[in-house]
Length: 298
Image (cartoon, rainbow, N blue to C red; front, side):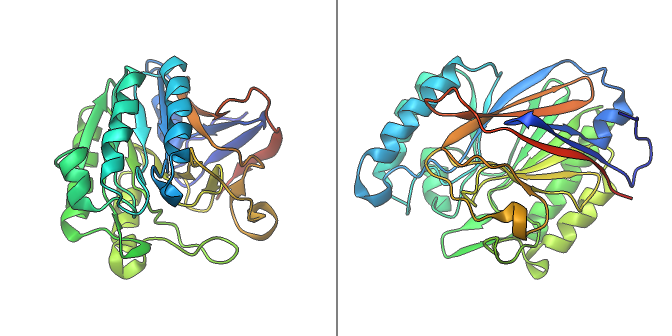
């Protein structure tokens, strides 16, 4: 595969497995010299859904596999509990603590911010520095809407931490529950609208594109979903650990949606200028395979 040096181009490769292999421009510019960085991503556990223990039992199985999977830390992309059911946070944490590796969460639209601060973390917006990688965790969801929001203060915070990461030779992954990418039917139509911070976020992403690898999101319950039209930064929605739905996005909507919808989590490995995302289905060994050709955006 040819190398890419122009800041307005991106190479994008999906392989013949449930592995998704990405080549962020920032990693290519760095020349692949960084230390291998494996970590795990889970989302939308929704403990308490339907007022029974099914989601907690699923989280228990997923957490056991997260504990065994190779990865230095775990990112949880929101909707920890369902419908703000406060007693479920204690159940979530009891299971989470058995993973025996750091777990860093963000709130989803089912996680009231005051409950997230009470039971999970203060402040909500925080930075995790992992060797040469900087992970920015933001709360951009509210319980009264499926859309996302970014305040002026949050945008300033993102901008400052991206600039600081660049100065320190670190590369950034930005985690928010709700995506910024505009989407319509057959997608769910939930995103950060222009008046609620989308425009400001993309201006920041463009300004720091040499050091931003990707934007990570949950929220959609559509397996692994992403868009390829905001080169060179990748925008990726991760599968739910509880349930996913096939909305036939590959046939009817821009971007990509691998044909795998069983609940699970992702193992992310960054090395040699590549970001590999391996979709682990909880309790399963088999996998649906898919190839997408290399794509370059001008």
